[in-house]
Image 1 (cartoon, rainbow, N blue to C red):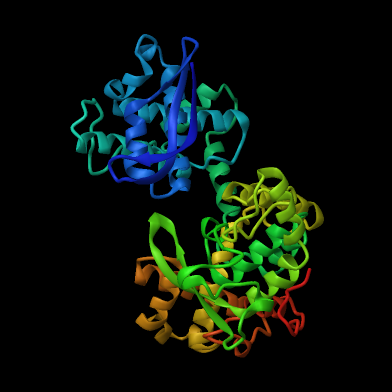
Image 2 (image 1 turned 135 degrees about the horizontal axis):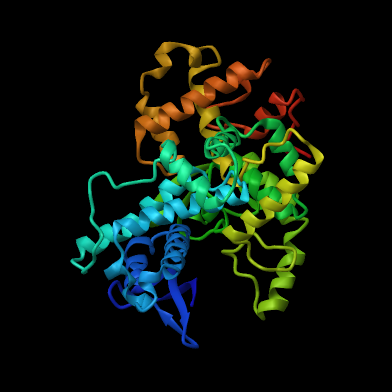
Length: 437
């Protein structure tokens, strides 16, 4: 048997609108079979976010692959697994993953990740209970997880891994994994190194647009060449009216929520000079050759082969750029990811709002609803206090760590992320804020 997951899009009769999510498939007896119950779950719970759907489908598929190796499930149809799985199988799956990790001497997945993944699988069984679908999984307020700090369990895993090593190996692996986790902003120097490592300029421009707007990758790839409706003012910067230094932009974010964000003029100018004028025309021509039609005005970002940039393409290009960055700079952190661009904008906003000295004072900890609302709207978050406190800490770290950093160059309505990064790196900001690499 071979378990797989694939994306699917169609028009649902229930909602009378197009939907997109992942489905699970098993190849068995020379045929592909859809797994109805897991797929109904993925439809109901993940269709609002294709990335969430992919994550849930990935974990459920991994779990089902593990289940298929257990003797008890040899004669059970995979479509009926959900009715026979118990809490014990989820426990064994966690221990199995930890054992494989020790065998391969890898730091990932960490114990924390293994626990979180088991929680995702437990959500599936919780959904079964809510829908009154027969199953043997017991839902408790606190679901059992493997305690990888327990000496007996560590010894058991070491024995199963058939390795003669100290039982602290898992703790050591976890410690190394934790050390590689980002505890602050992606550094200004790492930003510059990574920007200089992208072989395709489209990803460099996407990274810089993300720095200046805090948009998610799924939101960036939908940014248009020319907007319509409320976004009809969005054009190539050379064609826009320069009546303001900031521009509003309405987008559809996570869970299909609409929100209006601020895009600074310098970011749009960067796009125009570094991509639209130099790269877009030839890529649009390749798009036309490839698809037999003119590139829609709703699509701006294209690869050098004329294909629309996707979230997965951003991730793959960033992983490739990271390998180049690490080869060129040993201090470059392997934990850096494209998504970390979202942290710069809100951090600088709080520094600007409180001032370099003010953000270090106790009074800054008092929740300022006005600035918190601006940050939350830009990020698309819902928790005021958590969001505010998180970026308050990052702002303090930045002010304390970077000598000579001056907040005067950052203005609340037109936060210039490029100037700030240049300044933190000890260089003079470019007059047009190009953050050249």
